[in-house]
Image 1 (cartoon, rainbow, N blue to C red):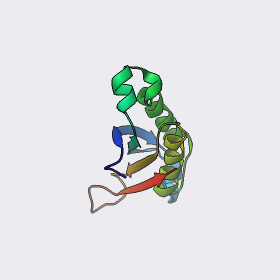
Image 2 (image 1 turned 90 degrees about the horizontal axis):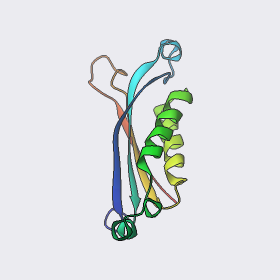
Image 3 (image 1 turned 180 degrees about the vertical axis):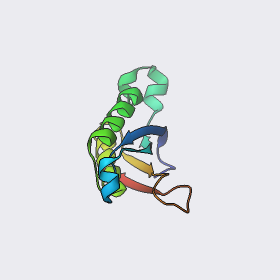
Length: 120
């Protein structure tokens, strides 16, 4: 997939919200990070200089942040799926890779992260 398409990176969308399974995570918002890679053909956008031939990443990053802030998922895997669905709803996106970082998840580790890859 990565050899076939160009990539738009949206990195490190910082969110403070409810996310987690444990009782304390259900009441106290915590910091986590959402990042996305969008796989699509950017040739036409590069030639035309027209936003309609690409993804409006300003709009998408705001939508991803809204999903992360309002979904109150138990699992970061669920949040990643919701964000992947939003990315794939943008017509030109053929595939996406979503990473959710949860730096406060473990006492003895700096970070926990998951990455999922989804195609149309």
